[in-house]
Length: 77
Image 1 (cartoon, helix red, strand yellow):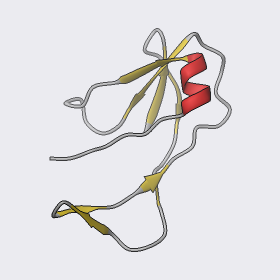
Image 2: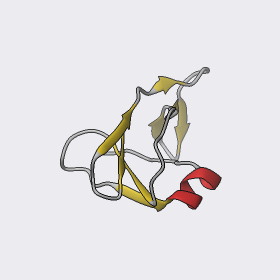
Image 3: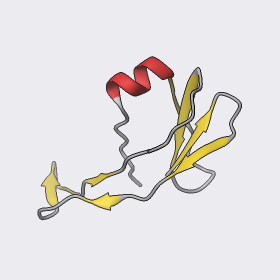
């Protein structure tokens, strides 16, 4: 998991941590929940989160949104 600033520069990386409990089935699909946390994040006007290979895009939020709401991502096929 990578956090970038408004210029696209990587500012922090972190790992996913599997949340406790069993895997759930939602609408016939296996769902597993993971958590992540970015620490020691330098100040920026805007942040983007990127996970996985280059086929996945970057999700952007301004600094206030990122701090207030955090991030929730959903990955699928």
